[in-house]
Image 1 (cartoon, rainbow, N blue to C red):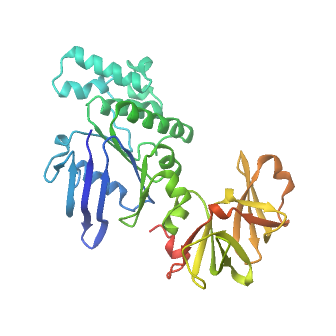
Image 2: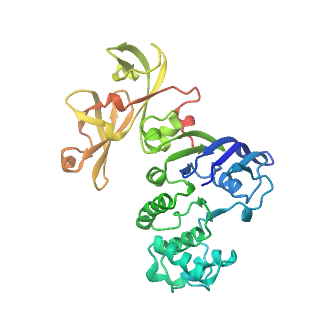
Image 3: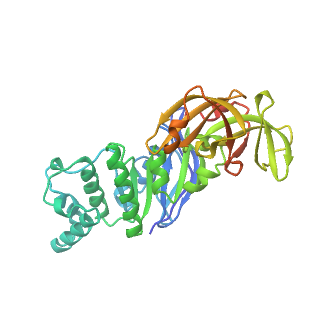
Length: 361
């Protein structure tokens, strides 16, 4: 199984920097997701790994070998594109057999490999069908089987689910991870969908404006992000500005606008320092005491209600309500909001301001 190592990899188009000096190691058998907003450089990065485009600077190593000047067909990789690429004049079996046939394998071996890979993606009953007779999810499964049949141990997925319906995307993303782990292959998966990245990844590489912002497991990036951008981009969060008022009993007291205080777990910032508190909506609760607020919006989300309220510190805070309690809350209602202090993450207040710190470009 190949390790992928990037060392100082950059790509420039004139004065435009698409990817800026990235260092990254992807371990053997690891499922890595490159996540970020549109235009952040994630597709450019995966295409440099594939050899579709050459870096302006830096080096790409696959399996310990320098890929400088090595053509895509000589890198032993499988590449699944956003736009489903199947030969329309070939059946599913014909498409999947194409790789082994191009490698000069005997007919019986071609058939064996094709049946094995088509079985892995659960399309055995569709082997004789042509792409036009398949739905979008089935076409992408056939495309995946064709790539896997090549025997490549490194699989590159460039927005493989973005053209599919929402329900199909959910089903197929679990299939992707199952296949990768069953075959023991290394996967680099590009997406802009946070939920997709959270559900399939061993680690997430979060990008912004051509650079890597943060790398970590889905759980780490969700519960303990290192940057405000990470907290805001992955999932949803409330960002509340304040100052460290004092340290009390292993906790930090944060003063918000208007002299309102909230208590969070002890943070590494000193008294008087300007900070931003990040707290996910699921960790904010209506309570008998806490931040006084007035509800301005209640939205039905299926399995829960999402409410938004303006606090006495003039911050808009979203919180979740259990589905069975939805009728208890309405627009204009006054509530007290308590936050789970252990779930709050405290950042230094960015000099450029919160809006600039979380901007996608």
